[in-house]
Image (cartoon, rainbow, N blue to C red; front, side, top):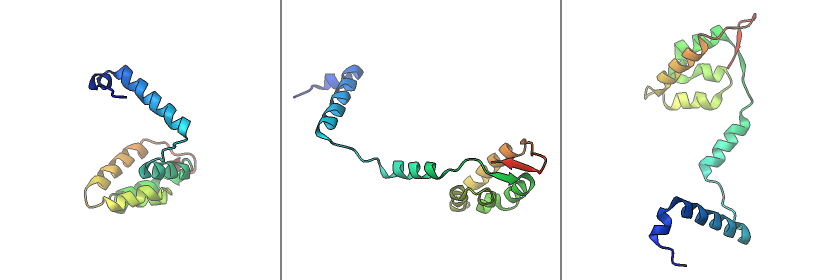
Length: 119
């Protein structure tokens, strides 16, 4: 087997070695389990149900009054995981920055005839 270090320095040879490894794993029936953070990300992506319709004025009021502190506007929009992130990072200033970004996104949005927007 003894592959030299020069073989590993060449990208084409490295790709060929990785393909050979994938073929051997398939041949012997070896399956790699995805990492835990990949599984969590997949689970969160599956739970995403699409955009929510919320009242624009209420969303803006919640973001300005206590969104930077507890993510109330995200909880109102049904985005519980983001709301929890706001709660976790409220003491760092990250939640404040995220709220500013949310406001920059929502303020130019035009509401429909009922004052609703999709978040």
